[in-house]
Length: 228
Ligand code: AP5
Ligand code: MG
Image: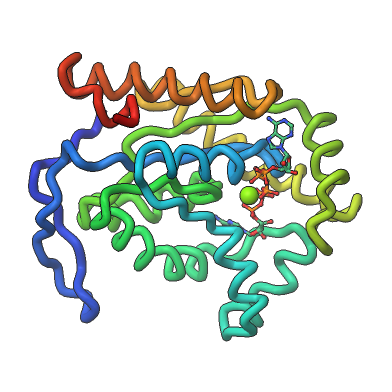
């Protein structure tokens, strides 16, 4: 487990490093990995509330940019509409500030980033230098047929048409499954059966995180993972 030092480093608006008055014990920085429709957003929201951390969804932020017609939004619209991944630089630049701000505020649950080995490799040195890298990752495992059924039932605009869903699922197989293989066997990587009802998925994630947090801090320090 890559454990951070007690003092964390962040960048100010000018990009200069500065010390953060955030202690390691007050931080929880999580990553949810899963296929389109696996329940990342659903679970991230609940985990954020339970642990008092910030939910950051790369997809939600990108969709907001499209809605607000920002320069990023104009750049990414056609990627989202086709189910393709947005260029790494765009996503990483967009996430840097919110991730550092969330870490300063007590931690985050990041949903949708990194979703390729390249993104994980490219973002780690910066995140590590800033003291904001992910501490634990949860993979929500759901079968393809269930994913398709969920997304077709949801119909979130142009992204949830049958052709685009197929494309998103293929991109997941090609680009994100290798990330799971890259993270496999790390002691901070957990896989949960995401095909269960949402409450059961949530209970399994919390149980994993409680075990992880306790092993990291010792039995007397489990209050954060218990949500107390
Ligand atoms: P993103 O927004 O991340 O979409 P996604 O990965 O395709 O996943 P979804 O948000 O559709 O599903 P989810 O896993 O959050 O599930 P949810 O909880 O909503 O990305 C969108 C696009 O942005 C990408 O295609 C790409 O273009 C771009 N992008 C984003 N990040 C990027 C990155 N890092 N790099 C490059 N490009 C990037 O649940 C889905 C449905 O299932 C809901 O209706 C929900 O109610 C239901 N449901 C949830 N859990 C359960 C359950 N346990 N049982 C039954 N139903 C359930
Ligand atoms: Mg989502």
